[in-house]
Length: 432
Ligand code: EPZ
Image (cartoon, rainbow, N blue to C red):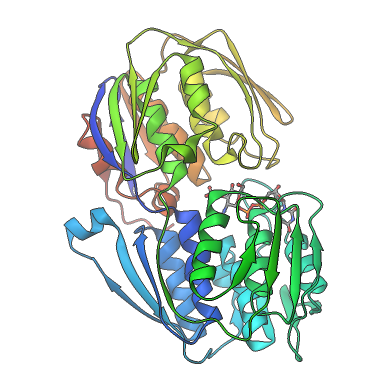
């Protein structure tokens, strides 16, 4: 199993190119199931999760071709073409869905195009129980019959889906995406209330509209979809990754220095910018870029709570804690999206952080400096918290279980290394 070795204490100076967003790329790839014509997607990040999605789609009958495997093109993001004239299978097996919950997103398109889908229930995961009841509720509102058998969801609509009203009791990104992808081919109008407003939903809507879908209300919590008989092929560029942008924007606060993040959109990290300014780093916004610099003064404590977009994202909570671990005073974090998203805390404590957790709340009392240690985490963003902590810590940090990082951060050692971080990957061959 690969490990990442970091020797902390090197200020970061330079530019980082932000990749396409993982959490936009995954539903966009799935959207190819809605048409028998090719879907061309550019700025696809090269990650374990996008490769995993490609494997699942290939099993369903999708032909996938890729351009941009050279180094230069890799930096600019890959272009993939997905085409599925005929869907060969309508089953998404346990083995793939358990590894990547986003696989459940194939349910809506399969149901809409083929009238049936058999998809493994994802089950819980490290960050929480994460049920799919809202997804199933959406399919039922469009007339599908849902049965659970042998750990699989069987969704059926032999005479096709009918538009309907879907009122979500709370915001779910995945359920909104699944509902949208089912509704675009349903008969008549669907209204989705309390829809998620994450930029990745906006990106999906943009692509679906380029494929001929009719959707009103992008960026709001009420989406109105007029179903179409068929969609056609399209070309779409995946939006920049706001979590990668936000993560690297925090790095100068932790390690010192000045970083410019390019090929991104500062608006995507609108909730993080005031937090960065409040802790005491300077943020300059440009056209498609953000520059963050630290003057070396001690950081100040802040209080935040995670919320659906446009609130502070849960996917940046762990990374922010790495920063607050050395901020002067007491910071408070409340995690409102997932019930078990403080798994990085015991590892940060091993590096010398002073953090106490009580239910969904964490209190972080800043210490002067963290100390490097061997650490590991059980999810992607928690692993990145440990990388950030290592960049600022004294001595060597070894982040184990790097495959979590490879699910969502492209070439981190290269991106941080070229800005002055002492960070290397040590290859290991022990099975996961
Ligand atoms: C998406 O997960 C992201 N994943 C997550 O990113 C992100 O943390 C999350 O949205 C919140 O922003 C992808 O986009 C692939 P939800 P998703 O449905 O769609 C509960 C990362 O690190 N819920 O918005 O699965 C759920 O348990 C990841 O990249 C139900 O109860 O999240 C959670 O508490 C991790 N029933 C809350 O809603 C349902 O049917 C929000 O989850 C669905 C969700």
